[in-house]
Amino acid sequence: MVKRRDLFKLGALAGGAAVIPALAAQDTGVQAFARPAGHHHHAAAVFRGRAAAAPEPFTVRLPLPPVLKPSAVLADADVYRLTTRPAVAELLPGLRTPVLTYGGSFVGPTIRATTGRRVIVHHTNALETGTSVHLHGAHVPAAHDGFPTDLIAPGTTRTYEYANQQAAATLWYHDHAHHMEAEHVYRGLHGFYLLEDPGERALKLPRGSYDIPIMLTDARFAEDGGLVFIMDDSGNRTTLLANGRPAPYLPVAGRRYRLRLLNASNMRVFQLRLAGGEELVQVASDGGLLPAPAPTDTITLSAAERADVVIDFSRYPEGTKLVLDDVLSGQPVLRFDVGERERDDSRVPSELRPQDPLPEATIERDVTLAYDVDLGWFTINGKLFDPERVDFTINEGSTEIWRIHNSADPIGVPHNLHVHLVQFQVLDRDGVPAGPQERGPKDTVALAPGETVRVKATFADHRGRYVFHCHQLDHSSMGMMAVFEVV
Ligand code: C2O
Ligand code: CU
Ligand code: CU
Image (tube, rainbow, N blue to C red; front, side, top):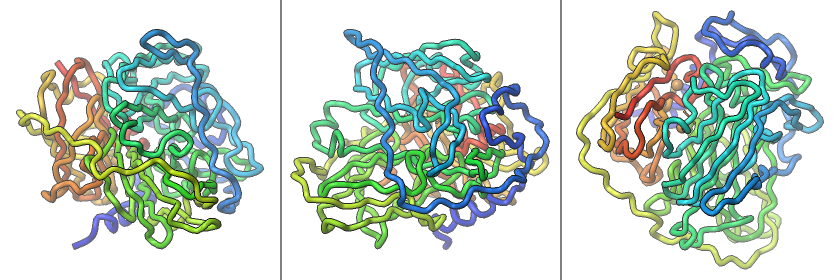
């Protein structure tokens, strides 16, 4: 039997060969945004310029995204202001890269929130195309979820409210504008939203400066530093970035750290491993804490998935340099430079947060992800995205099982599925019960070619239209997305 990791490898290779016509014109600068928003039938694009030299690893320090300061603190809410605008960032040493940003930084500022306390964000769009802000993993009313056609027009401001009625989790916000999310997110419209709760705090996992968000992406750089965006060009996005830098180093003390790993790349599957197969302890996934810590030597993240891991650096002598590699690309992602031992009050308790059983499901649905040879597009249940069409109608409060299948199409491409509004439970993969790393609340699930995964969720509290889609954003931007309406 072929192992899951091998399937991903095969799929990644097949996906890298440009088998479908690319959509977007070649553009390495933000001038791209002066033209009208994406349309289905761009001519196939090629990039004929020269590529930037591959950067030397471990020459720059891992930057931490700035933490956003509230513009007002109300009795029951924190209010923020953010402007989506072009900027220039030094992603590769010595090169200036035009990027799109929330508030000026390539990894947008981190919003810190607490369960039960509201967050209000006034988003101003200073781009020349529409934007839509989605808080990935959040349980919010449809009007605040960033539906693809619910746009912030250029030059206007829109207010999003988040009630934070859910458990502590590593969430993130990113653009979701119809057809444009792939290019927008690739060029920098992404940031962390870290939700805490008192129960999690009481566990005494590493906190404060020992709790580090790490956003993993990939990019294709032109010689002048410009980001080359061509639709479905994943095979050429060969530079891996951690918080927007190529294989940076991070000085750490000899103690425990919590690392919040997010795969914010459009298309890449990361398979992360410490050199020598050293132990990582996963404590949380997309929607928050696992029932129990899951020790492992490998963290596999498809696009948009998160894994919070604890590493105990007190195991290593001062001066140790420990590299975190991506096994699939054979490239380093990050290096930890272990410093002096430090006093450490943190711990990883043997129980974290039990997963509440969900009610019996009243309906089972099939969701088939496929490449349609005739259409030449990636589809869900045979159809391309139509924001006006409701694909599933769901009764408010009901519990459903979705049987998600990645059809073994002629290309054999890996996909994943992300469902808005809910956190789901992964029941099984090809009939095998979910492993310890998938036993926490999830909002995105990976599917190797041919694989079937069953997930279960309760669609409570909010009515309205939401999307579900492959989170390989080049796919979703080309139509691998569908709508459910809670009624
Ligand atoms: Cu991360 Cu529909 O989004
Ligand atoms: Cu989402
Ligand atoms: Cu896909």
